[in-house]
Amino acid sequence: MSEPALKLTSLCVFCGSQAGTDPVYAAAAAALGGELAQRSITLVFGGGRVGLMGVCADNVLAGGGRIVGVIPTFLKDKELAHPRASELVVVADMHTRKRVMFERSDAFCILPGGVGTLDEMFEIVTWRQLHLHNKPIIVLNTAGYWDDLVALFDRMIGAGFAHQGHEALITVVNDPKDVAPAAEAELAAPKPPVLFKV
Image 1 (cartoon, one colour):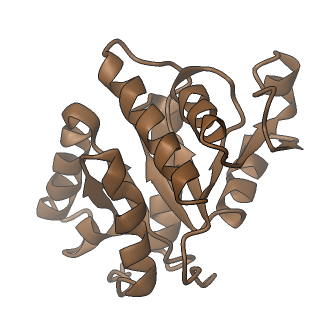
Image 2: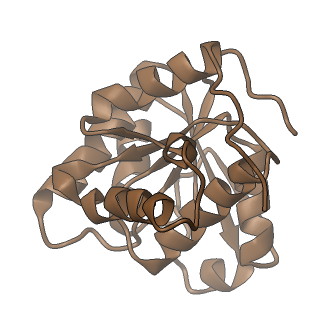
Image 3: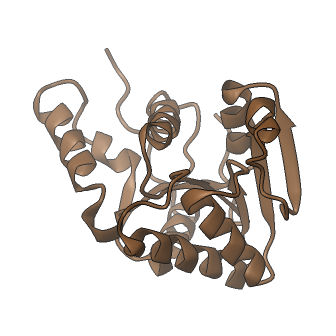
């Protein structure tokens, strides 16, 4: 298991390549970007210039912060890479992208997004369940976007497909200002690994 950092220096953000229909999603992504810049926390993200990931990255840069984009070649070739990334890591495929993002990050934050965001989130949650890491995973539940997801975790436990305590794999916050403090609190006092048995 890789050991978490003692202080939050980098945060991986998984989020939509679209901005969504409600302006509140972009506003929260922008606010998170501002918070990261103010706290000198490097943003690690999918490297795109579009959607919520572009909004968050732009606001980190606007605040004088640093952004590390990790993008596969085929998306860079479509000219979707952020042109002002502090560092752009171009990788061969989506699997490598997720591994590099994991390696470069002290913690993770999940913003609203679609199936790609769900894919990224569930992989990193599964790795934590399997004790491959114990890095904080913060879900930013903007305007209740992830309410059904949180309920699904409870349903999985109630239906016997996950063990009691698996709800602790994620930490849910509602305000962008709470993301970094929640991650740092967990880094300072790591959660015990959840029960892993078959």
